[in-house]
Length: 239
Image 1 (cartoon, rainbow, N blue to C red):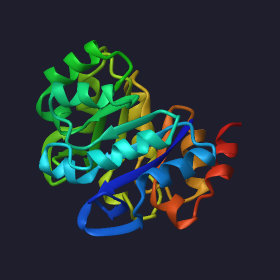
Image 2 (cartoon, one colour; image 1 turned 60 degrees about the vertical axis):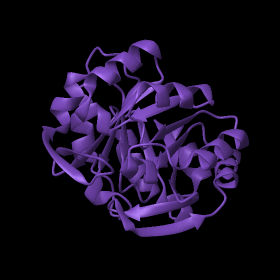
Image 3 (cartoon, rainbow, N blue to C red; image 1 turned 45 degrees about the vertical axis):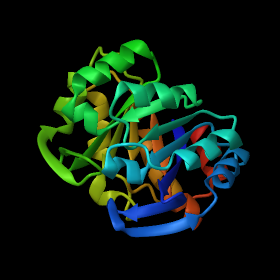
Image 4 (spheres, rainbow, N blue to C red; image 1 turned 90 degrees about the horizontal axis):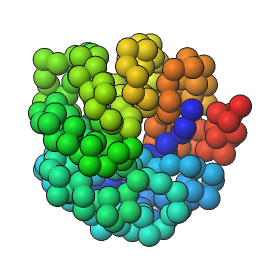
């Protein structure tokens, strides 16, 4: 199982939100490039980046911070937030991202997701952000009537690289991930599923790993707070 340290970007800084609330942001580092280099030095194999401002505005906002990160690392990184058209997808991949994460458009414009997956094999992931089992979009501000499972299954065979499943009510709350819901989703799709939201301890990571069906996990606040030691976690997940 791959551990993805998360760098959430708001106004050019590394932050973590509480349950997706932009007014509940804690700043952990004002130098995103340095933070990314620190994660790589500790042994991270991937990074997960989110343009929080972009998720709400519908277009990239923290481009300079993302570019700083890409200049600072040699490991692959994936980015979500405000990526809602093919031109933006192409632009980010040309800048060196290994994978683009599509969230809102996965619910609102599935044809774009399928087109992007055909054009860029292995470089498109879908973010399924869930509140009470239903998909939320536009920076988690809008609820839909679609279930996470139904939307995931709609992309079977489309060629997407991964599904990132976030339980919004657990995100940033340090209360543990929704292991059961994420594992259930992973068992109902052939696409690799990455768990996100609430990962707060090494024990949480081991629980996700031990399901044998979850391909990866994203952690942010716990790494910044020191609740998870990145080196120790990577060693534990390598077994």
